[in-house]
Figure: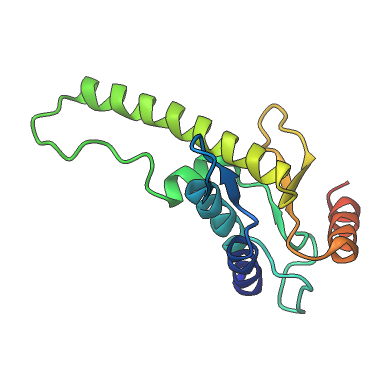
Amino acid sequence: MGFRNTTIAIKKAGDGGTLKLRKDDVFGIDSFATLVLLYMAAKTYDYPKDENQNPSIPARYYDQGWKTIAEGLGLLYASVNKNTTDSEEAALIKKRKATAKNRISRAWTFLAKKNLLIQLKPPSLGENAGYVLLLGDDEENAEVIENAKEIIQ
């Protein structure tokens, strides 16, 4: 799952797909957005799909939510300090969740502006948003989006 997607996402980043203009008027890579893109690419079915992949799950479609990314990247770990109380640890986790959610949401916005993903399904009560990764050319991306729409609707 996601090997070809990840390889293509790395190439997209290497080709400047995740560059941003810094305050000093120098381009730099948005390393966190790149990491989020690579995580999503690794967790989605490659395109084109092979016969071993679940036909009811679209290729390059991510709907596991921000929390799965945060957990997968280790953003929610609590303090390892033995002297931390349970209430201090709970407060730290709450703060880290808010920070992780904000960072991942900003990364998604950035990746959408860079035409590397599109939100196909908005979040609703009890359901995460659904994103299609735009890792191909315009024609391939249109096929991936159309296929995802057919499967999820």
